[in-house]
Image (cartoon, rainbow, N blue to C red; front, side, top):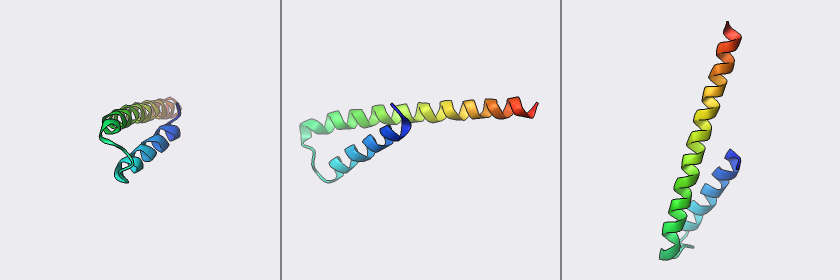
Length: 61
C-alpha cells in the first residue's frame, strides 16, 4: 500500500464516522482500521525521513 492510499482510506473512514454513516457494530472495526492505517503512515514517514537523512549524509562527505 502506498502512503497516499492509506491517507485516502483514513479520510474516507473518518468522513463515514463523522457523518454517522456507521452503525455501532461497524464503528469499532473502522476505528481499528484507522489506527492500523495511521501506524502504517507513521512508519512510512519515519522510514522516508531516515532514508533522506542518509542520502544527505552521504552527499555531504
